Amino acid sequence: MMLLPFHYRVILVLIAAAPTACGLLALSRRGQERDAARMRFQLTAKGSQIDVEVGQGELAVSQDELNRWVQNAADAIVGYYGRFPVPHLRLQIEPSGGNGIRGGKTFGRGGGLIIVHVGSQTPVSELASDWMMTHEMVHLTFPSMADEHHWIEEGIATYVEPIARIQAGQMEAAEMWRDLVRDMPKGQPRSGDKGLDHTHTWGRTYWGGALYCLRADVEIRRQTQNAKGLQDALRGILDAEGDIREDWELRKALETGDRTTGTHVLTNLYEEMKDKPVEVDLDGLWKQLGVKAENGRVTLLDDAPLAGVRQAITGRSAGL
Ligand SMILES: [Zn+2]
Image (cartoon, rainbow, N blue to C red; front, side, top):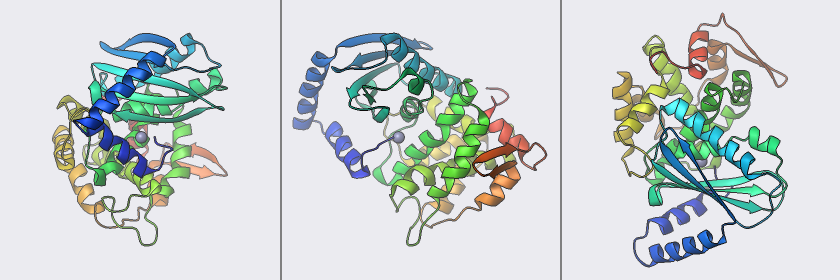
């Protein structure tokens, strides 16, 4: 999740990737950040190590409460992917003004780095319902892409985050479907938009990417009689060492995922959506899945044609 405009991220990534003068600059800045840490603690996630540094500044929450927040997100990731994606993650929590989790960034450098800003007045209840830490950790699970494919990185993080939290018992499925009915239309192409590889607005990047993921999940499950889903494809990519530390071609990732599910869904959907603005029949899709939304409330219908697919998306797939 970036509250910052997209071009700012690109600049940050370029600086992080530059090998010489900029690299030295980044290193000396990191030294200063280390010196400025006022609290450090460590936790583990299925054998991986997470080193947390909390920067200078006031926070309304305790170290134990921060620890629980990070551990919950890490546990949700381990549940969805079967393991934590990198052996050693550095996580910087930077106190800032105000209330709430105020933006995060994830990098592959140094084996994995997440920086999250937390408002000084943020109460522990906001940590318990937070989605951003899990979203940032999902970024660790997929290889780094060229800029025109940024939509797949944000789309996967946006789509997988609530599912991982539901599977970990941290969120209700109905809450996610309510949010998807509200938010998925933001991913539809607007007038003048092109395909996902060409239009890089916020809506098309985050929700256009999530729409690709939802369509892929439903189609893989339909074609395999619910034996496989997007979760299997994403595990297959991670198991092939496709994590954030690696630069991959998008096609390599999609083909790796398709091999895991025995389908061509990821590749075919990419061909369909990469260049052309594809309007998805969301109302038809919700009806098929048995998601009925009225006045901001959602009812899940178990007699809908694809109700089993809907249940499998947030349940733990057989064999996982
Ligand atoms: Zn993100």
